[in-house]
Length: 308
Image 1: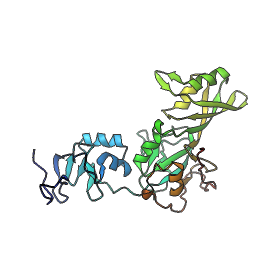
Image 2: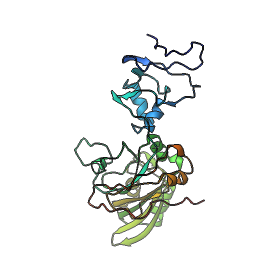
Image 3: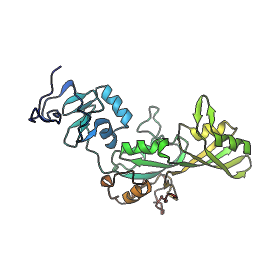
Image 4: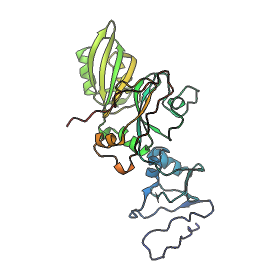
């Protein structure tokens, strides 16, 4: 295999040479640097921070040979990069990660949480302001579920917030048809298995009953695909409306359907317990509104302090 061209560093230097930024594009893989080199981030983490995709998806793109650094194709997610490098994914230049920003979005029912839908259904990105930077969602809401959806330009942060180990609770209000019994609530509190999928214990409380419908408060920490609907169905309750009202410390409040609201960076760092590097936090721009049927801004901040 042809060696990478050196960049002028001494051969006795302990820091591995970087690919020549002015070299022609090559299909040969770039070599991974020594793991003790402290300058820069691993490429998969860098792409996640830049909002391109998740770290796991980035590793897949690297395996497929779709990621190049300074014209050299990578074959290792351990390769480290900095803002000085020219990074391309599928031939498109990746901009350096921007300061971390988060938004609350009140997702209406009837929208897909995806960048595009093969069946041509409307997605949330069809209704978001066009001036937004590239953003990813923290988790998803299915087609008919409405309520709070967190958006961020930091894919790595999104991944951390989605992990059950982070401990961020998801709060829902569910309207369900059927009979609510103490036995059913106790079963959900212990955790259920549906079609071979294990769902962790969830806190479910009956708020009120109207005819054959019940309004329930549901709190969980995993957020698996259609978790609330499947878990409640396992105890004889059919969900016919589902609203997420809180994700971790961020609450929906009175944010109107279809409206987008940026979260203050200082509040983010404080509420997430300092897990976010404050040097990557940006000052929010004036409140942005979605293009849904209701475009008034919510009055509350959508945040609350964690209980100690």
